[in-house]
Length: 170
Image (tube, rainbow, N blue to C red; front, side, top):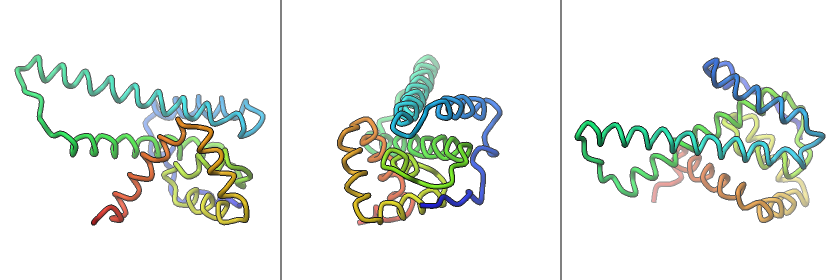
C-alpha cells in the first residue's frame, strides 16, 4: 500500500533534543536490511520512553513529598490519564521516526505494525488499507501474537485512539 506524505510534520514540531533522539533511531532503522529486524529498535525506543517517563514521575513525586505535599489519591483515573499521555508520546515519536524514513509503501506485517502506532492519519490510512488486502490481517495477527511487547504497546495505543475519538463512551 502506498504511504502518503504526512500533511503536518511531527518531526518539525519537535524540540532539537527530541529531533536528535529521533534521528538516532532513524539512523539505526536505516542501517538494518529490512522490516523483519526493525521492530526491536522501535520497541526499544518505546521502552526507553516508558523508563524516562517513569523516572520523571518518580522525581516529581519525590519533590512533592519533600515539600510536604501529599500524594493525591486519584487511583484508576490518574492511571488512565498517564496511559493516555504515554500513548500520545509513543504515537508522536513513532510517527516522527516513520516520517523521517520517507517510505513509499507498506509491504509486510512488521512494517504495518508500527504504522498503526503513528500519530499521522496518512500512516494509519495506509496501514488500514494494507490490512484490508486478502491474507494481510492474518499475517499481522501472527506478528502480534509472536511479539507480546508489541502487543502491549498496540493495546495502549488503541485505547488512546478510542478515548480521543469518543468511541470509549458507554
